[in-house]
Every structure is written in structure tokens, then in C-alpha cells.
Length: 394
Image 1: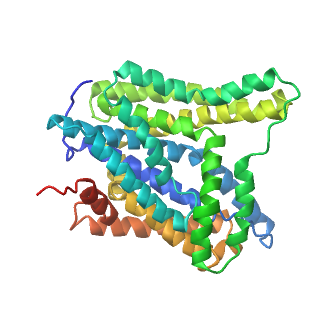
Image 2: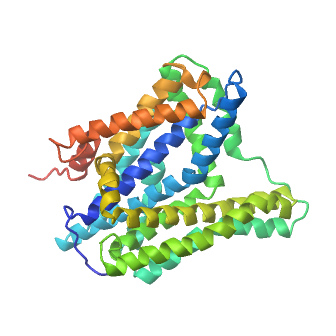
Image 3: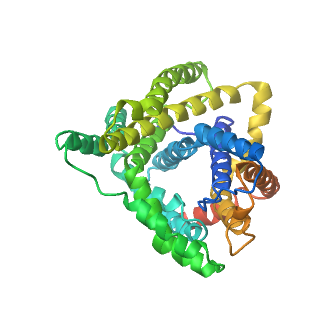
């Protein structure tokens, strides 16, 4: 594996921070229009507002649903490469320290889950372990494993089994059972009820949903691809990487369009629900990753243009404080929409929620910009960093 050192203060890293900020921003907007998984669509709205809500809902999910999470996963693997490579330059093995760092991330995710059951930090902390055994593999070996995982082998196994067993009827999704039970505490006015419910019921719903939708295979694949992006120094601005991102944009468009069309018309092609469900998971997974590549390659190319760089670089502080922002938006968002807080889920559709989400993003961005004027890291980033490198040795 090549030992390519990175200067973390180099301008090229800013595109990563800005891209991470873009991912967190888009995740925040999606969480807002979902009322942080408290799904409710007011019926008293006028027809024109209901129509606008649907347009906003469909547009945001087309652009960001499953894609923002994928960008975040890709950058998770990239960050691992940066940290591991920096330690290799010092002759140190980062793997044990990374394991400890994942335990700390699991703790942050636990706290976040008290407010929002859809937390992904605990999920990343567990699946991030897959990076440890492959850290010294060759690029070819890592890429091969990533592609294998991205192909969704479990779903294909299920699909083949269903094909050869015409009478087989799969059991209902386990996640549906737990999502249904969430109503037991979502109607409460007590934060304690929400916190306990999120840990006992909501977390199970989110975990089984991720399993049923191929995230347990897709996320490690993206982690590994992110590590390869670091090894290849693809975020370094030069002629070669510019050509790479242009090709990536073209190929990902050519891949996404037929996948999206196929996913849209899949119910017209496959009549048996058991087969349809398995193929839908596979094709949706591929489609989301393809469009994620469109977004990433577009962002990197636009960031290189001077005028757009000045605009997109505004996201850098937001991306540098991604952990703080991710947890902060859960705390604030849950209070805004849940019944122990303002309970606005009853009065807001996608249009109002989008405006709320944009307002929260602007406020958080202003806070990040102010905070980083006097601090090197965000508050939670600083805690995570200090705890990662804590040592009992004098």
C-alpha cells in the first residue's frame, strides 16, 4: 500500500470538508421533512399546499434519499485513510486506536439515539470494524471486496432461492413490526418515554430496516471505496484527478439513468412480490450509489471553479463540525417536532419543514463559523479527538 502523506491544512482537504458539510446539510433537510421519523401529513392544508408538499418531498428524496448517507459513508472511509496514513508516517499502527475511536463513536451514537432513533453513528461504529482487517490489503483486493459487497450477495441469494421455490412466501419485514410499536411512545409527552422507546424499539426498527435494505453490505463497501479514494489522492486538485472526476460523472450518469428507469418500471416487469422486493432492494442500492457518484463528482468539479468555490467553501465550517452538527440537529429537531417539545409534526408538511430545516442549517452554519474562529475543532470533535488519543502513560 502506498504511503502518501497528506498535509491536513492543504486547500485540497477543504473540498472534503465542504462535501461533508453538504452531506450533513442534505441529511438535515430530509430529517426535517420526515419530522425525524414521526410521519404525519396534515389533512387540513389547502390542495395547492398539499401538491407543493408532494413536489418538495419527492424532489428531496430523489436528490438526497440514500445518497447523502452514501456520501457520508464514503467520507468516513476517506477519514480513516487520512488518520491511518498519518500514523503510518510516524511508524505507528492505528488499528487499535481506531477500534477505540469506534467505541467512542458508538457512545456518541447512543446519546444521539436518545433523541432520534434513526441515528447512523452506532451503525457506522459497528460496521467501521470492517476497515481494520483490510487496511493493509492491496488496492485491487480492497476494490474487489467492495464490489462484491456492493453487489448485495445476500439479496441475490434470497432471490435465487425464491426463484426455485415458487410457493415460498417470505415473512413480513421485522422492521415494520418495530416501526408499528413506535406509536406506543411517540404519542407520549415525556422525553424519558421517547429516550427509552428509541433505545428499546426505535433502534431495533432502524437496525432491521438497514438490514432489510442492504445497508449492512453497502456501508462497508463505501467505507472501503472511501479508503481507496484516499490512497489514490483523488481529492488532490491536479490534471489527472480532474479527468478522473469528469469520467466518474459521465459513467455514473450512464449507470444511474437505466437503473432508475428499471427501478421505476420494475413492478410492471415482475408480478411476484417476493421476487420484486429482493430486486427492488438490489437495484435501489445500486441506483443510490450511482447518483451519489454523480453528486460527488459534480461537487468536486464545481468546487474547482473560482466563483463557485467561494460559495461552496462556505460549507467548510459546517463539514469540519459534522459530528456536532449531526447530533445538534437531532436534539433541536426532536424538540421541534416531537410531543415532549413543540409538537409541530401536527402542523407542518414538507414545505414548512423545508423552511424550518433551511433556517436551522443557516443558524448552525453561523454557529460553526463563529466557533471555529477561536477553536480548531467543534466541541464534540474536540472531545472525540482528545478521548481517542487519551493515554494512561505519563
